Every structure is written in structure tokens, then in C-alpha cells.
Length: 292
Image (cartoon, rainbow, N blue to C red; front, side, top):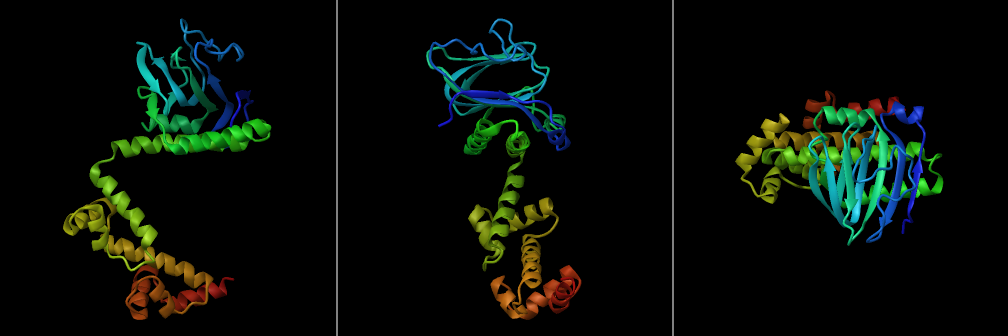
């Protein structure tokens, strides 16, 4: 179990090069009726409820237990923070927060100076008006890794901790995209995942439509609109890419590969391969051998 800790880190040119520098991280369990925040942080991070605080970097905070109140922005918008919430703090935005005195809470945080966060903000993937967001088990898992690295050797592990900050940003951005995606977009994305995972099985696109609970005619139309190709064409292209990998890395025959990837015959595989790759499987295998 993670013990209470915090660590502050300097700017780092290497981390800055990939767009995210973790400059602080920590874990604190605030017991009921405790002083909050604990008087132990640097002056630019400490605050009292009356004055609030403005940071110069991004902070991602996971409230794992308890409950509290968060206020932010010029008008002091107020929001309840429940266990399992993410609080996202933006540079230059006034804020204040505190646990319910009767409950306390457990907070996990990472603070980052980050051009990647700035890009996500400009792209609308993260939004200062939506600072309290639902968490998922993935957030908790990433924070566990952050804490392990920070407690082991925070300064030496700063580059790794910074990349985990980018992973948190990816999860936050994904939440926004999924929330704003139209039902048809979500349907097509689910279909693409199913097709990718099962392209080596004898699956049909009609089976996928049934699994997704829609008619095949609707599925085919929507898939073509969103992906630019029909679901059958997409499935064939996935299988051909897999065939390229097998031909380049094994000695399997065209007939064996056709059977592995659900083609009706070696001729069927060869025809589709020629159309998409521009050469026959035999020529592709020969080219792969020559390039070794």
C-alpha cells in the first residue's frame, strides 16, 4: 500500500522534448477532521480555502476515497467531488478544493509542464470548464506505477514518470472523444476492434452486424460512410496485412496461410493479395528473402 509522500522535481530537457515534464507527484490520505492542506508543501503550492490558488502547470488528481468540494474559475463554480473522480487543474485558473471534514479523502496527483496538455486543451480534448471527470481502473493503475517510481528514485525516474503523465492525458482525451462520438462512430469503432481481433478466424461481417445488434444493410452503409470502405473490404485488408507478416517471417505455404486466415482457397488469397499488395504471394516471399 502506498504511504503518504510527495516529491518535487526540476525541469528536464529530455522530458520537455517529448512534450511532458512531471514536476511533482504524491499520495496523501487525509483523515477526518484533519487540517487541509497539510502545511508542508512549497509556498507556491500551499493554499488556504479563503484565498484559493493558481498554478502554473497542469495537475491530474485522482480522489480514490472520500468526498469533498472543488471550486474553480472566476465565478467560483462549485462541484462535488466523489470517490473515483479525476480533478484536472489548468495553469492560470483559480481553484480551491477540500475534503469533507467528516469523511476526509485519499488524493493522488501528478503535476506536469506540458506542451502535449496544451495541444489537447487547444484541440478541445480537455476543457477548463469540465475539471471534474469520472475515473476508470486504468487511472488508478497508472498512479500506482507513478508512485512506485517516485518512491523508489523520483529524480532518476523522472522521464518514466513523465511518460505516465502522457498516458493519463491519453485517457482524459479518450474520454472526451468517446463522450462526444455519435452512436454511428462508436458502432464502427467497435466493429473495427472486433474485426481486428478476429481476422484470423472464420468470421463474417454479417456475424459482426448481428453481434452489434444492427441489420447488415445498416452496418454496411454506416461502416462505408465512416471508414471509406465496406466492412468486407476492411476485413480482407486486415487478413492480407496478416498474410504479409506470415510470409515475411515464416516458411508457411500459400495454402497453409489461406487456411489460417479464413480464405476459401490459396487462389482466393493470391487474388486478393495481388490486388492489394501489387504482387503475388510468391513474389512477396522471394522479396522478403532477398532483403534479409
